[in-house]
Amino acid sequence: MPDTKPLKISRIEVDRDLCIGAAPCVTVAPGVFQLDEENKAYVVNQKGADDETILLAAQSCPVQAIKIFDEDGNQVYPEV
Image (tube, rainbow, N blue to C red; front, side, top):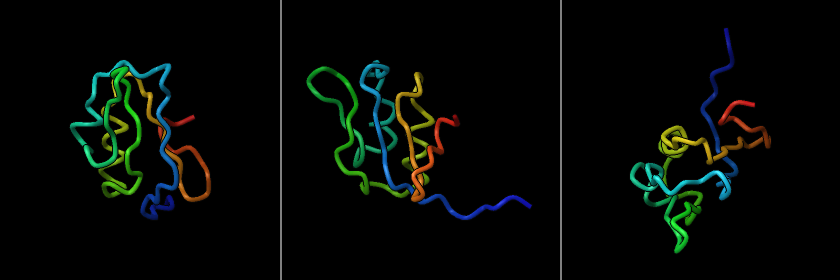
């Protein structure tokens, strides 16, 4: 049986080169993501939502510009 411990996000990164400003991340987790003056997403508060919501926001990105890392430093989304 696979290990299904709850996800604990330790780090969120936005690849600004990939970001196209579609903003579903802001819609899903406005406490975590905002758009700057270049219409690129950035993290305003890494703890601005629960981990499931943050992961959902990352998964909503049409270009997978948001990387999520667990407490061990492993990239959990998008899968590498």
